[in-house]
Image (tube, rainbow, N blue to C red):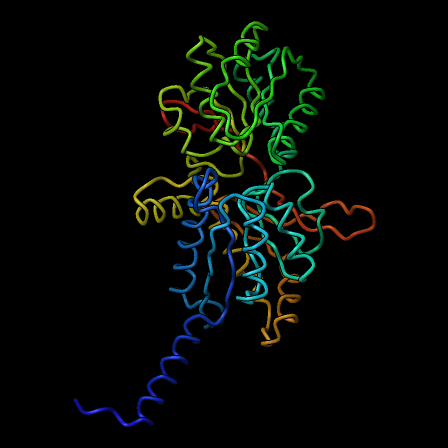
Length: 383
């Protein structure tokens, strides 16, 4: 076989390299739990990002430049989240980092981004204190402090609840923060608590705690849990004849609850700015596009990551990238707080979090929650 001239081969390689660079000019990172117990959230998040990425690039990208998203599996573990953040920021040299999936991991990894003056944009972190890490920390996931009081109020209104029992995971930043906010909301609303029980990640048998709760005869169970423990708690409660409503936090707000709790999933109240039943034009477009692409229904976590990439796109359109990574990272950080966007989760803007100890804080989501209840394998909006 006759070999091509050396110069021709070099030219072909150069053209291929140039084409590859032009096809992915703006590099962003995402650290998500794609394996392990939190993968039920992380995979939905990845799918939401991918759907938005495809749409944005098909529409011309950012001022003609394509977006590239480098996605790494942080396994829902603090140590892995730290390692992945370091890789994305220092090795891959991304412009900003989305994630990680869990609040526990965000508390550990976000300081890496803050120290590197790189935006850490959480799409699923709702525990207290995340955005107080610093002014490079953003999230479009509405905090438990904002959502849980509204969820409780709606459950009281619809189910006539007068007293509740409480269950929460006592070894996780997210579930403990949820408990603190549930406790405050119940005190503010003057709702008596009959029993408070705890559990830990990885527990599988909850009947001892549920039996104590049943003895107190509550009208509902307030539950701060991730799905891995929360769904079995619902199942085991029904198995011992404890058929009262559950009031859950962000960790229970996923269509995966129908797979895990099956026919025992009815009667769960949750709050979020997003609902599959919201018929706005933006959400209807998202739900159809997601369902067509992935052959399954989206959840809150997919909707929030989908919107997060569009929010970031609006900021990038206002930034003239210089090619100097430190300068460009700073410019993106400065542009993000001014973004207003209406997407699958409704009208959105950032709200400055409270500064702590004289240290500038980051930015939380300012959105109105929708309260839904599970009925017959779907979330139904309550009004």
